[in-house]
Amino acid sequence: MTIDQPLSLFISSKMMELIDERLALQEALKVYNMRGWLWEKDAGARPEPIQSTYLKEVEACDIYIGLFWLGYGQYTIEEYEHARKKQKPCLIYEKNVRVDQRSSELTAFLNTIHRVNDGLTSCYFKDAAELTSRVQEDVMRLLTTTFRNNRRQPDMNVQNRSGSITTRASDHSIAVHHSENSQITLHNYNTGRPDDKK
Image (cartoon, rainbow, N blue to C red; front, side, top):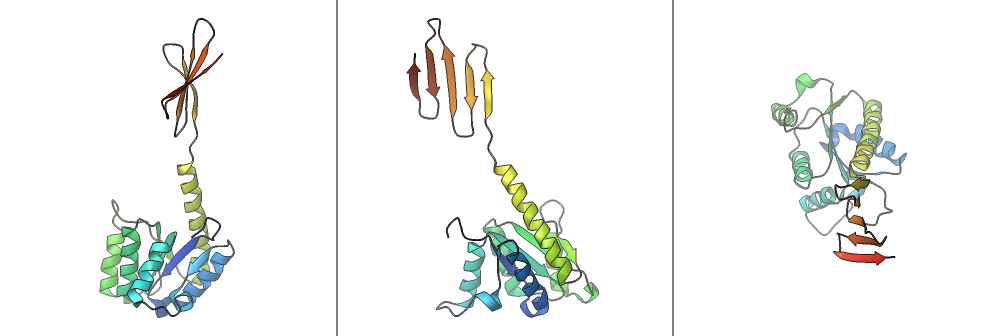
């Protein structure tokens, strides 16, 4: 994968249960030049087992999108657990329609996601239009938050007791020492190499 390829989102659900939502979501992501990966449209024919195919695609994605409604899909759960194991950002969406008909197995699984201390924050939707809008907003929020958290800004001009000024950045530290004869010594603590300039 090269850096100029679109952001890849693995769209996971019990396939036939949410087919309209899956297709609508894939189209909505194209608006932002993002690639939503769907089994029925993107898997194709491969000389490997089905399980190997979907797990490889989970590993290759940037973000996992989990859609849940009424039925418990064993492979969907496996995709989610693999995404968590690979530390992929996971966004979970639950269709909040006729939930009284939801299987007990899926209810139990979703209860593990809803745990306050070590679960995830799910989002609820009622139809494809609401889902696509929420996913677009949440993905952009995730990208913005990730960017801001990863930004590295130096703490400039930190003066210590000796009168030296140390400039700190995320991956290096340079100390500037002034001597009585006006000689300036720069010391790069990243390499341990002093540089003398007069």
